[in-house]
Amino acid sequence: LEKDLRKDIPKDIQKRILPLVVCRRGDGEPIGSVGLDMGEDWPSVLFRVHAAPWLGAEAQDRVVAGVLRLVVPWLIDERGVVSVAADLDGGMPATLAAAAELGMREAYRLRGAFWRDGARRDWTCWQKLHPAWVERLGDPGPGILVAGEPVASPK
Image (cartoon, rainbow, N blue to C red; front, side, top):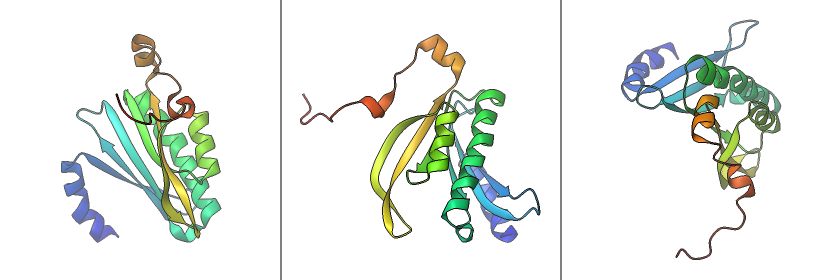
């Protein structure tokens, strides 16, 4: 793993992707990873969290939820990122609850995009905007959750 990281990290940094390793506090065991896809000068960040498959579905859900609770406030409050978005598995209830608790909103949903645990699950993207920018530019609204039916034919 260390050998692969030493080879891949310089390439990722050039592509503005910051890789982070998620370790368990008790024993320092790596149990996942985070890939922060940074925009120019960090105005927006899209990230993905991967939890180790050997943990099982419930533990993976808790790991991803815990990572959200750490990474989103760090990016918004400490780094001053304008927009933070996370690609999430729509079948992870603790993760989706954590996203909602953090004030994130669902930005888009790809139905049945994941095959996990013998079933198709939605791929969702949740977004949080920096409060100062929302105050300045206005709230963009609740998004796709109340968007209604899609347009049948564009005008």
